[in-house]
Image: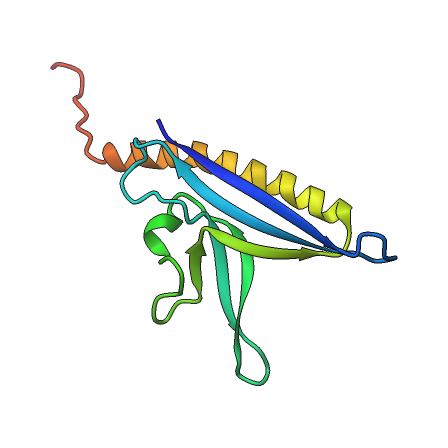
Length: 136
């Protein structure tokens, strides 16, 4: 069996300030040796965008879907594509409530991904099917 992991490291810039800024490092992993082929620890989807002056920047998009492991590369987007996957990313929050909600959502999405990978793997491994009619 295999499991996905997601870890959070939170630091606050001047927590006593009227409006503290919270920085959360999100790191994903893969535990166990029975993961389906092609499944790895890069669970975070990043989108490369371009600003008005033509400079590229990367923005957190969300957690992968089971099919994204094959369609998205790790660390940088493939030529002609704007999405890629990573195992670590830093997020910034301006209040503790939003940070807490984001952690809960990320946990739920990683748990849902585990279910989806299981179903997706079974579909890939069972593509051939023969149906036999009743005897005649």
